[in-house]
Length: 75
Image (cartoon, rainbow, N blue to C red; front, side):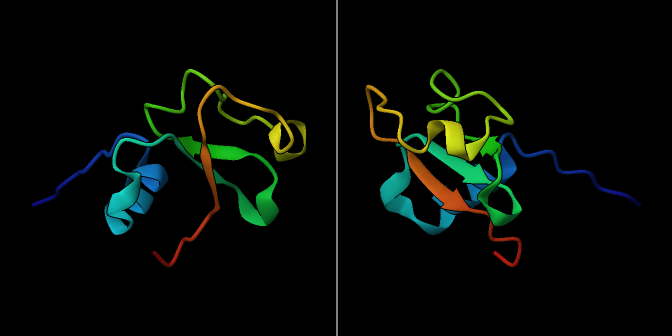
């Protein structure tokens, strides 16, 4: 028997699961060495594009606070 679990925006969803204070907040996860965005929560998708380089958006002002995290593969 095989099982497949497909989680929407997996790394952002996991970060929210372990930090309940982020429940309805926009969350983005960055790749190794914080190179680019690899996961976005549904709240962040309208502000940040997938694969957007971190150096281009780190000083950008968004209309809402977006929480950016380095990837945590062990989590």
